[in-house]
Image (spheres, rainbow, N blue to C red):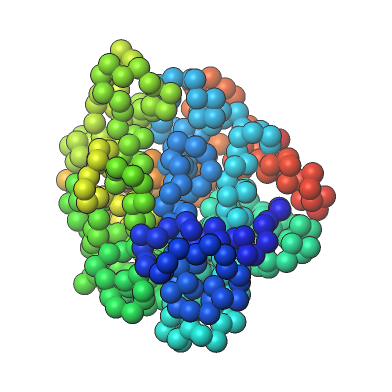
Length: 469
Protein backbone atom coordinates (compact mmCIF):
# COMPACT_ATOMS: atom_id res chain seq x y z
CA UNK A 1 0.00 0.00 0.00
CA UNK A 2 1.54 3.22 -1.11
CA UNK A 3 0.36 6.36 0.63
CA UNK A 4 1.12 9.99 0.05
CA UNK A 5 3.09 12.04 2.53
CA UNK A 6 1.19 13.49 5.47
CA UNK A 7 1.15 17.05 4.22
CA UNK A 8 -0.50 16.03 0.94
CA UNK A 9 -3.15 14.09 2.79
CA UNK A 10 -3.87 17.06 5.02
CA UNK A 11 -4.31 19.30 1.99
CA UNK A 12 -6.74 16.77 0.55
CA UNK A 13 -8.88 16.55 3.66
CA UNK A 14 -8.99 20.28 4.14
CA UNK A 15 -10.13 20.82 0.59
CA UNK A 16 -12.62 17.93 0.56
CA UNK A 17 -15.58 19.71 2.12
CA UNK A 18 -16.36 23.22 3.26
CA UNK A 19 -20.11 22.83 3.75
CA UNK A 20 -20.04 21.20 7.17
CA UNK A 21 -17.91 23.75 8.95
CA UNK A 22 -16.49 27.17 8.25
CA UNK A 23 -12.71 27.05 8.35
CA UNK A 24 -11.89 30.57 7.30
CA UNK A 25 -10.18 31.71 4.08
CA UNK A 26 -9.04 29.11 1.52
CA UNK A 27 -5.79 27.41 2.44
CA UNK A 28 -3.21 27.07 -0.29
CA UNK A 29 -0.23 25.70 1.63
CA UNK A 30 -0.06 24.23 5.09
CA UNK A 31 1.90 21.64 7.01
CA UNK A 32 1.02 19.11 9.65
CA UNK A 33 2.00 21.36 12.53
CA UNK A 34 -0.16 24.35 11.72
CA UNK A 35 -3.16 22.27 10.60
CA UNK A 36 -3.63 21.34 14.24
CA UNK A 37 -2.53 24.66 15.70
CA UNK A 38 -6.10 26.02 15.61
CA UNK A 39 -9.46 24.46 16.28
CA UNK A 40 -10.90 25.67 12.97
CA UNK A 41 -8.32 23.92 10.78
CA UNK A 42 -8.21 20.83 13.00
CA UNK A 43 -11.99 20.45 12.77
CA UNK A 44 -11.75 21.14 9.04
CA UNK A 45 -9.25 18.30 8.58
CA UNK A 46 -11.60 15.79 10.21
CA UNK A 47 -14.62 17.26 8.45
CA UNK A 48 -12.80 16.65 5.17
CA UNK A 49 -13.02 12.91 5.78
CA UNK A 50 -16.80 13.18 6.03
CA UNK A 51 -16.82 15.35 2.93
CA UNK A 52 -14.94 12.67 1.00
CA UNK A 53 -17.41 10.02 2.16
CA UNK A 54 -20.31 12.23 1.10
CA UNK A 55 -18.85 12.89 -2.35
CA UNK A 56 -18.15 9.25 -3.21
CA UNK A 57 -19.64 7.79 -6.37
CA UNK A 58 -22.52 5.33 -6.23
CA UNK A 59 -22.13 3.97 -9.73
CA UNK A 60 -18.34 3.54 -9.68
CA UNK A 61 -17.04 0.79 -7.38
CA UNK A 62 -14.79 2.45 -4.82
CA UNK A 63 -16.24 3.44 -1.44
CA UNK A 64 -18.92 2.49 1.06
CA UNK A 65 -21.88 3.96 -0.78
CA UNK A 66 -21.13 2.13 -4.05
CA UNK A 67 -21.59 -1.15 -2.15
CA UNK A 68 -25.30 -0.32 -2.30
CA UNK A 69 -24.97 -1.19 -5.98
CA UNK A 70 -22.09 -3.66 -6.29
CA UNK A 71 -23.01 -5.65 -3.17
CA UNK A 72 -26.59 -5.90 -4.40
CA UNK A 73 -25.51 -6.95 -7.90
CA UNK A 74 -23.06 -9.47 -6.46
CA UNK A 75 -25.81 -11.24 -4.53
CA UNK A 76 -29.48 -11.46 -5.48
CA UNK A 77 -30.94 -7.96 -5.14
CA UNK A 78 -30.17 -6.10 -8.37
CA UNK A 79 -29.91 -6.80 -12.09
CA UNK A 80 -28.35 -4.45 -14.67
CA UNK A 81 -30.68 -3.30 -17.43
CA UNK A 82 -27.73 -3.22 -19.83
CA UNK A 83 -24.41 -5.08 -19.83
CA UNK A 84 -22.57 -2.13 -21.38
CA UNK A 85 -21.18 -1.08 -17.99
CA UNK A 86 -18.46 -3.72 -17.73
CA UNK A 87 -17.65 -2.91 -14.11
CA UNK A 88 -21.20 -3.39 -12.84
CA UNK A 89 -21.60 -6.45 -15.05
CA UNK A 90 -18.50 -8.04 -13.51
CA UNK A 91 -20.10 -7.77 -10.08
CA UNK A 92 -23.42 -9.08 -11.36
CA UNK A 93 -21.84 -12.10 -13.07
CA UNK A 94 -19.59 -12.72 -10.04
CA UNK A 95 -16.53 -12.37 -12.25
CA UNK A 96 -14.18 -10.39 -10.03
CA UNK A 97 -10.43 -10.55 -10.49
CA UNK A 98 -7.31 -9.21 -8.86
CA UNK A 99 -6.53 -6.82 -11.73
CA UNK A 100 -9.71 -4.86 -12.33
CA UNK A 101 -12.80 -5.64 -10.24
CA UNK A 102 -13.18 -6.36 -6.55
CA UNK A 103 -10.01 -4.74 -5.31
CA UNK A 104 -11.19 -1.13 -5.68
CA UNK A 105 -12.40 -0.98 -2.09
CA UNK A 106 -9.06 -2.05 -0.66
CA UNK A 107 -7.23 1.07 -1.82
CA UNK A 108 -10.07 3.45 -0.97
CA UNK A 109 -10.50 2.20 2.58
CA UNK A 110 -6.77 2.22 3.32
CA UNK A 111 -6.47 5.80 2.13
CA UNK A 112 -9.20 6.74 4.60
CA UNK A 113 -7.38 4.79 7.30
CA UNK A 114 -4.16 6.64 6.54
CA UNK A 115 -5.97 9.95 6.76
CA UNK A 116 -7.46 8.99 10.12
CA UNK A 117 -4.06 7.87 11.40
CA UNK A 118 -2.43 11.14 10.35
CA UNK A 119 -5.22 13.20 11.90
CA UNK A 120 -5.14 11.17 15.13
CA UNK A 121 -1.47 11.99 15.51
CA UNK A 122 -2.03 15.68 14.76
CA UNK A 123 -5.00 16.04 17.11
CA UNK A 124 -3.44 14.03 19.93
CA UNK A 125 -0.16 15.95 19.85
CA UNK A 126 -1.68 19.41 19.51
CA UNK A 127 -1.43 21.70 22.52
CA UNK A 128 -3.73 24.31 20.98
CA UNK A 129 -7.04 22.44 21.08
CA UNK A 130 -9.45 22.58 23.96
CA UNK A 131 -10.01 19.32 25.76
CA UNK A 132 -13.62 19.21 24.55
CA UNK A 133 -12.69 19.62 20.88
CA UNK A 134 -9.75 17.25 21.11
CA UNK A 135 -11.88 14.56 22.77
CA UNK A 136 -14.63 14.83 20.14
CA UNK A 137 -12.22 14.77 17.20
CA UNK A 138 -10.40 11.72 18.54
CA UNK A 139 -13.76 9.97 18.97
CA UNK A 140 -14.76 10.83 15.42
CA UNK A 141 -11.48 9.61 13.95
CA UNK A 142 -11.59 6.31 15.83
CA UNK A 143 -15.15 5.85 14.59
CA UNK A 144 -14.24 6.54 10.94
CA UNK A 145 -11.18 4.29 11.06
CA UNK A 146 -13.26 1.51 12.61
CA UNK A 147 -15.91 1.96 9.94
CA UNK A 148 -13.31 1.35 7.24
CA UNK A 149 -12.00 -1.76 8.95
CA UNK A 150 -15.53 -3.08 9.43
CA UNK A 151 -16.01 -3.04 5.66
CA UNK A 152 -12.50 -4.33 4.94
CA UNK A 153 -12.89 -7.49 7.04
CA UNK A 154 -16.36 -8.12 5.62
CA UNK A 155 -15.06 -7.88 2.05
CA UNK A 156 -11.55 -9.32 2.32
CA UNK A 157 -11.36 -11.34 5.55
CA UNK A 158 -7.86 -11.13 7.06
CA UNK A 159 -6.36 -7.69 6.40
CA UNK A 160 -3.36 -5.63 7.53
CA UNK A 161 -4.00 -3.65 10.70
CA UNK A 162 -2.36 -0.34 9.79
CA UNK A 163 -2.07 2.11 12.68
CA UNK A 164 0.93 4.10 11.48
CA UNK A 165 1.68 6.84 8.95
CA UNK A 166 5.25 5.62 8.46
CA UNK A 167 5.50 4.51 4.83
CA UNK A 168 8.51 2.29 5.54
CA UNK A 169 6.33 0.38 8.01
CA UNK A 170 3.10 0.44 6.01
CA UNK A 171 4.72 -0.79 2.82
CA UNK A 172 5.76 -4.03 4.54
CA UNK A 173 2.65 -4.98 6.47
CA UNK A 174 1.13 -8.43 6.38
CA UNK A 175 -2.41 -9.61 6.90
CA UNK A 176 -3.60 -10.40 10.41
CA UNK A 177 -6.61 -12.51 11.28
CA UNK A 178 -10.11 -11.09 11.00
CA UNK A 179 -10.52 -11.96 14.69
CA UNK A 180 -7.55 -9.77 15.63
CA UNK A 181 -8.89 -6.84 13.63
CA UNK A 182 -12.38 -7.15 15.11
CA UNK A 183 -10.94 -7.41 18.62
CA UNK A 184 -9.00 -4.21 17.97
CA UNK A 185 -12.20 -2.54 16.76
CA UNK A 186 -13.89 -3.34 20.05
CA UNK A 187 -11.22 -1.31 21.82
CA UNK A 188 -11.29 1.54 19.32
CA UNK A 189 -15.07 1.80 19.23
CA UNK A 190 -15.33 1.61 23.00
CA UNK A 191 -12.86 4.49 23.22
CA UNK A 192 -14.73 6.33 20.46
CA UNK A 193 -18.05 5.91 22.27
CA UNK A 194 -16.56 7.24 25.49
CA UNK A 195 -15.01 10.24 23.71
CA UNK A 196 -17.91 11.32 21.52
CA UNK A 197 -20.60 13.73 22.60
CA UNK A 198 -23.91 12.42 23.91
CA UNK A 199 -25.67 14.86 21.55
CA UNK A 200 -25.29 15.80 17.89
CA UNK A 201 -22.97 18.76 17.51
CA UNK A 202 -22.73 21.63 15.08
CA UNK A 203 -19.79 22.04 12.72
CA UNK A 204 -17.70 23.97 15.24
CA UNK A 205 -18.33 21.33 17.96
CA UNK A 206 -19.41 23.94 20.48
CA UNK A 207 -23.21 23.68 20.43
CA UNK A 208 -25.78 20.98 19.83
CA UNK A 209 -27.38 20.70 16.43
CA UNK A 210 -30.54 19.33 14.86
CA UNK A 211 -28.46 17.90 12.01
CA UNK A 212 -26.95 14.43 12.31
CA UNK A 213 -23.85 14.99 10.22
CA UNK A 214 -21.23 14.43 12.91
CA UNK A 215 -21.11 11.13 14.80
CA UNK A 216 -22.21 11.10 18.41
CA UNK A 217 -21.49 8.28 20.85
CA UNK A 218 -24.51 6.31 19.68
CA UNK A 219 -23.02 5.93 16.20
CA UNK A 220 -20.02 4.22 17.82
CA UNK A 221 -22.34 2.03 19.89
CA UNK A 222 -24.32 1.05 16.80
CA UNK A 223 -21.19 0.03 14.89
CA UNK A 224 -19.84 -1.73 17.97
CA UNK A 225 -23.08 -3.74 18.10
CA UNK A 226 -22.41 -5.01 14.58
CA UNK A 227 -18.81 -5.88 15.46
CA UNK A 228 -20.00 -7.88 18.47
CA UNK A 229 -22.35 -9.84 16.20
CA UNK A 230 -19.40 -10.77 13.99
CA UNK A 231 -17.59 -11.96 17.12
CA UNK A 232 -20.64 -13.96 18.29
CA UNK A 233 -20.59 -11.95 21.52
CA UNK A 234 -24.35 -11.86 21.85
CA UNK A 235 -24.57 -10.39 25.34
CA UNK A 236 -22.29 -7.50 24.49
CA UNK A 237 -24.20 -6.87 21.27
CA UNK A 238 -27.48 -6.77 23.16
CA UNK A 239 -26.08 -4.39 25.76
CA UNK A 240 -24.57 -1.99 23.22
CA UNK A 241 -27.72 -1.95 21.11
CA UNK A 242 -29.85 -1.28 24.17
CA UNK A 243 -27.78 1.81 24.91
CA UNK A 244 -28.87 3.23 21.56
CA UNK A 245 -32.48 2.03 21.61
CA UNK A 246 -33.10 3.41 25.09
CA UNK A 247 -32.13 6.91 23.93
CA UNK A 248 -35.73 7.37 22.84
CA UNK A 249 -35.69 11.17 23.07
CA UNK A 250 -33.07 11.17 20.31
CA UNK A 251 -33.95 8.09 18.22
CA UNK A 252 -37.15 6.39 17.13
CA UNK A 253 -38.71 4.59 14.20
CA UNK A 254 -40.47 6.94 11.80
CA UNK A 255 -42.96 6.36 8.94
CA UNK A 256 -41.33 4.64 5.96
CA UNK A 257 -41.57 7.72 3.77
CA UNK A 258 -39.57 9.78 6.27
CA UNK A 259 -36.71 7.39 7.06
CA UNK A 260 -34.16 8.96 4.73
CA UNK A 261 -35.11 12.58 5.17
CA UNK A 262 -32.70 15.15 6.55
CA UNK A 263 -32.52 14.90 10.35
CA UNK A 264 -34.85 11.89 10.47
CA UNK A 265 -35.23 10.68 14.04
CA UNK A 266 -34.40 7.18 12.82
CA UNK A 267 -30.96 8.23 11.58
CA UNK A 268 -27.99 7.66 13.85
CA UNK A 269 -25.46 9.05 11.40
CA UNK A 270 -26.07 10.83 8.10
CA UNK A 271 -23.81 12.38 5.48
CA UNK A 272 -24.65 15.87 4.31
CA UNK A 273 -25.26 16.36 0.60
CA UNK A 274 -22.25 17.89 -1.12
CA UNK A 275 -23.48 17.18 -4.64
CA UNK A 276 -24.59 19.88 -7.00
CA UNK A 277 -28.28 19.90 -7.81
CA UNK A 278 -29.60 16.90 -5.87
CA UNK A 279 -29.90 15.59 -2.35
CA UNK A 280 -28.25 12.21 -2.81
CA UNK A 281 -26.60 10.39 -5.66
CA UNK A 282 -28.60 7.33 -4.58
CA UNK A 283 -31.83 8.97 -5.76
CA UNK A 284 -30.16 10.10 -8.97
CA UNK A 285 -28.75 6.63 -9.63
CA UNK A 286 -31.63 4.33 -8.68
CA UNK A 287 -34.56 6.37 -10.03
CA UNK A 288 -34.33 5.53 -13.74
CA UNK A 289 -34.22 7.89 -16.70
CA UNK A 290 -37.56 9.06 -18.03
CA UNK A 291 -39.21 7.24 -20.90
CA UNK A 292 -37.43 8.13 -24.13
CA UNK A 293 -34.03 8.53 -22.51
CA UNK A 294 -31.85 5.83 -24.06
CA UNK A 295 -28.94 6.15 -21.63
CA UNK A 296 -29.38 2.88 -19.76
CA UNK A 297 -25.73 2.20 -18.98
CA UNK A 298 -26.14 2.56 -15.21
CA UNK A 299 -29.79 1.55 -14.86
CA UNK A 300 -30.43 -1.34 -12.50
CA UNK A 301 -33.63 -2.99 -11.37
CA UNK A 302 -34.70 -5.14 -8.46
CA UNK A 303 -34.52 -8.87 -8.97
CA UNK A 304 -37.42 -11.27 -8.65
CA UNK A 305 -35.40 -13.03 -5.97
CA UNK A 306 -35.91 -9.95 -3.80
CA UNK A 307 -39.39 -8.93 -4.94
CA UNK A 308 -40.81 -12.40 -4.32
CA UNK A 309 -39.60 -12.48 -0.74
CA UNK A 310 -41.85 -9.63 0.45
CA UNK A 311 -44.97 -10.63 2.35
CA UNK A 312 -48.34 -9.44 1.02
CA UNK A 313 -49.32 -5.97 2.25
CA UNK A 314 -45.75 -5.04 3.22
CA UNK A 315 -45.77 -1.24 3.06
CA UNK A 316 -42.14 -1.24 1.95
CA UNK A 317 -43.31 -2.58 -1.41
CA UNK A 318 -45.33 0.56 -2.11
CA UNK A 319 -43.14 3.11 -0.30
CA UNK A 320 -39.59 1.97 -1.10
CA UNK A 321 -40.16 0.35 -4.52
CA UNK A 322 -41.55 1.83 -7.73
CA UNK A 323 -42.24 0.44 -11.21
CA UNK A 324 -41.07 2.13 -14.40
CA UNK A 325 -40.54 1.55 -18.09
CA UNK A 326 -37.11 1.91 -19.70
CA UNK A 327 -35.60 0.32 -22.74
CA UNK A 328 -38.98 -1.25 -23.51
CA UNK A 329 -38.84 -3.12 -20.20
CA UNK A 330 -41.14 -2.75 -17.21
CA UNK A 331 -39.19 -3.13 -14.01
CA UNK A 332 -39.07 -2.31 -10.30
CA UNK A 333 -36.43 -0.07 -8.81
CA UNK A 334 -35.40 1.11 -5.32
CA UNK A 335 -37.26 4.22 -4.21
CA UNK A 336 -35.87 4.71 -0.73
CA UNK A 337 -34.24 7.96 -1.84
CA UNK A 338 -36.71 9.91 -3.95
CA UNK A 339 -35.30 13.43 -4.48
CA UNK A 340 -33.42 12.92 -7.74
CA UNK A 341 -34.04 16.41 -9.08
CA UNK A 342 -32.68 19.84 -8.16
CA UNK A 343 -33.71 21.05 -4.70
CA UNK A 344 -32.93 24.45 -3.28
CA UNK A 345 -32.66 22.84 0.15
CA UNK A 346 -31.89 19.11 0.19
CA UNK A 347 -34.75 17.10 1.68
CA UNK A 348 -32.85 13.83 2.02
CA UNK A 349 -29.47 12.81 3.38
CA UNK A 350 -27.50 9.62 2.93
CA UNK A 351 -28.30 7.62 6.06
CA UNK A 352 -25.30 5.48 6.90
CA UNK A 353 -26.57 4.08 10.21
CA UNK A 354 -30.21 3.88 11.33
CA UNK A 355 -32.20 2.65 14.28
CA UNK A 356 -34.03 -0.26 12.64
CA UNK A 357 -30.63 -1.87 12.01
CA UNK A 358 -29.76 -1.63 15.69
CA UNK A 359 -33.16 -3.02 16.69
CA UNK A 360 -32.81 -6.04 14.42
CA UNK A 361 -29.21 -6.53 15.58
CA UNK A 362 -30.48 -6.70 19.17
CA UNK A 363 -33.26 -9.05 18.08
CA UNK A 364 -30.66 -11.34 16.51
CA UNK A 365 -28.43 -11.26 19.59
CA UNK A 366 -31.36 -12.03 21.87
CA UNK A 367 -32.53 -14.89 19.66
CA UNK A 368 -29.03 -16.38 19.65
CA UNK A 369 -29.15 -16.39 23.47
CA UNK A 370 -32.59 -18.02 23.53
CA UNK A 371 -34.36 -14.85 24.67
CA UNK A 372 -37.13 -15.48 22.19
CA UNK A 373 -39.83 -13.27 23.68
CA UNK A 374 -37.70 -10.13 23.77
CA UNK A 375 -36.20 -10.95 20.35
CA UNK A 376 -39.70 -11.26 18.91
CA UNK A 377 -40.69 -7.93 20.48
CA UNK A 378 -37.80 -6.20 18.69
CA UNK A 379 -38.61 -7.95 15.43
CA UNK A 380 -42.27 -7.02 15.62
CA UNK A 381 -41.51 -3.35 16.21
CA UNK A 382 -39.91 -3.21 12.74
CA UNK A 383 -42.67 -5.34 11.21
CA UNK A 384 -45.37 -3.12 12.70
CA UNK A 385 -43.86 -0.09 10.98
CA UNK A 386 -44.11 -2.02 7.70
CA UNK A 387 -47.80 -2.83 8.30
CA UNK A 388 -47.20 -6.54 8.90
CA UNK A 389 -48.77 -8.91 11.39
CA UNK A 390 -46.70 -9.77 14.45
CA UNK A 391 -44.65 -12.94 14.66
CA UNK A 392 -45.83 -15.21 17.46
CA UNK A 393 -44.94 -18.63 18.89
CA UNK A 394 -41.78 -19.29 16.89
CA UNK A 395 -38.83 -21.44 17.91
CA UNK A 396 -35.21 -20.27 18.06
CA UNK A 397 -33.81 -21.28 14.66
CA UNK A 398 -36.98 -20.29 12.82
CA UNK A 399 -36.85 -16.98 14.69
CA UNK A 400 -33.24 -16.34 13.65
CA UNK A 401 -34.16 -17.13 10.03
CA UNK A 402 -37.13 -14.75 10.28
CA UNK A 403 -34.91 -11.97 11.61
CA UNK A 404 -32.54 -12.37 8.66
CA UNK A 405 -35.54 -12.33 6.33
CA UNK A 406 -36.67 -9.08 7.92
CA UNK A 407 -33.22 -7.62 7.40
CA UNK A 408 -33.42 -8.62 3.75
CA UNK A 409 -36.60 -6.65 3.06
CA UNK A 410 -35.61 -3.75 5.34
CA UNK A 411 -32.04 -3.08 4.13
CA UNK A 412 -32.07 -4.00 0.45
CA UNK A 413 -29.63 -1.93 -1.62
CA UNK A 414 -28.02 -0.45 1.49
CA UNK A 415 -24.22 -0.68 1.74
CA UNK A 416 -23.83 -4.40 1.00
CA UNK A 417 -26.00 -5.49 3.92
CA UNK A 418 -27.39 -8.49 2.02
CA UNK A 419 -23.89 -9.81 1.23
CA UNK A 420 -22.72 -9.39 4.81
CA UNK A 421 -25.87 -10.96 6.27
CA UNK A 422 -25.61 -13.99 3.98
CA UNK A 423 -22.04 -14.48 5.14
CA UNK A 424 -22.84 -14.03 8.83
CA UNK A 425 -25.79 -16.41 8.63
CA UNK A 426 -23.69 -19.03 6.85
CA UNK A 427 -26.02 -19.13 3.85
CA UNK A 428 -24.01 -17.34 1.19
CA UNK A 429 -22.84 -20.44 -0.67
CA UNK A 430 -26.21 -22.21 -0.65
CA UNK A 431 -27.97 -19.09 -1.93
CA UNK A 432 -25.39 -18.20 -4.56
CA UNK A 433 -25.15 -21.75 -5.90
CA UNK A 434 -28.77 -21.24 -6.94
CA UNK A 435 -28.58 -17.58 -7.95
CA UNK A 436 -25.27 -17.47 -9.83
CA UNK A 437 -26.17 -19.89 -12.67
CA UNK A 438 -29.37 -17.93 -13.29
CA UNK A 439 -27.24 -14.81 -13.61
CA UNK A 440 -25.03 -16.57 -16.16
CA UNK A 441 -22.14 -17.89 -14.09
CA UNK A 442 -20.95 -20.61 -11.74
CA UNK A 443 -20.39 -19.90 -8.06
CA UNK A 444 -17.19 -20.72 -6.20
CA UNK A 445 -17.14 -20.91 -2.41
CA UNK A 446 -13.90 -18.89 -2.56
CA UNK A 447 -15.87 -15.88 -3.73
CA UNK A 448 -17.22 -15.06 -0.30
CA UNK A 449 -14.15 -12.81 -0.20
CA UNK A 450 -13.16 -10.21 -2.79
CA UNK A 451 -9.70 -10.29 -4.43
CA UNK A 452 -6.84 -8.19 -3.13
CA UNK A 453 -5.41 -5.98 -5.91
CA UNK A 454 -2.51 -7.73 -7.61
CA UNK A 455 -0.60 -4.44 -7.71
CA UNK A 456 -0.62 -4.29 -3.90
CA UNK A 457 0.73 -7.83 -3.69
CA UNK A 458 3.46 -7.08 -6.22
CA UNK A 459 4.51 -4.06 -4.14
CA UNK A 460 4.52 -5.96 -0.86
CA UNK A 461 5.71 -9.56 -0.87
CA UNK A 462 4.29 -10.08 2.62
CA UNK A 463 0.71 -9.83 1.32
CA UNK A 464 -1.04 -13.00 0.19
CA UNK A 465 -4.00 -13.28 -2.19
CA UNK A 466 -7.38 -14.67 -1.21
CA UNK A 467 -7.98 -18.19 -2.57
CA UNK A 468 -9.62 -18.47 -5.97
CA UNK A 469 -8.06 -15.40 -7.61
